[in-house]
Image 1: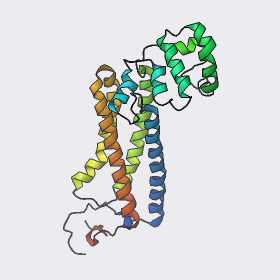
Image 2: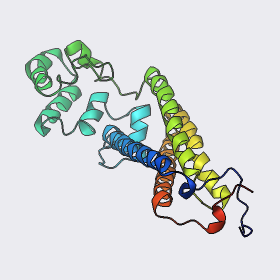
Image 3: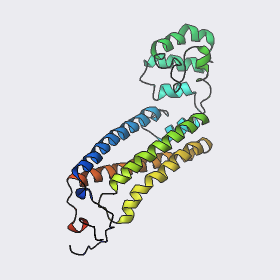
Image 4: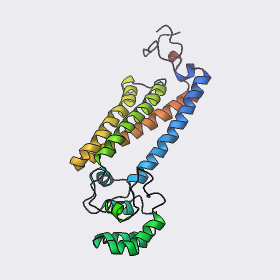
Length: 256
């Protein structure tokens, strides 16, 4: 074999040097993780976008999610954002008008309770601990108080799930991507390592945003960089696994 123009580590194996069974395993993993990541993005958009009245996902949406809104209650934010399509516009206006008029119990029983029972209690009946309980005046009062964003207990609970889950995802993605031929090597290493920095910055900024709203930019940028690295590793790995022909000096590295 002719001398390599670029030194190849003796343990490196390109996708094309791997058995078909291993490449098939990697392909199935990439397809499943890719679908999961896509649905995760859809969930993030559906749960956070529109809270500021703009249908796009904005920095202000992130601020409202973690810090709360100074312009309304948690229920109003939900009715303007992710829950806006769940009940007719006149019902939403009736509920928000009731809140602005003082949220009296008499009006609740005569006007608001039937709307909530018809449109909301299928999901918000208290059976799911992750959703607000809207069954009854005492329960609904908790979501018409000033919105202070996601509470600390929920942030801690979601943080450890998010950190463990995303770490496993990007470990798998990075391991598969390590078989791709990408130069310069510092760029390949940067693509592998960046998501781990981003997930730490992302989760940390959830808490910092509650104290200082501009940290919402860190949440948005970190999430964007993670998505970019994911897409790059996914596309490059899938392409090089089945369609790319690596340089001859990349193959057969037993002696290097």
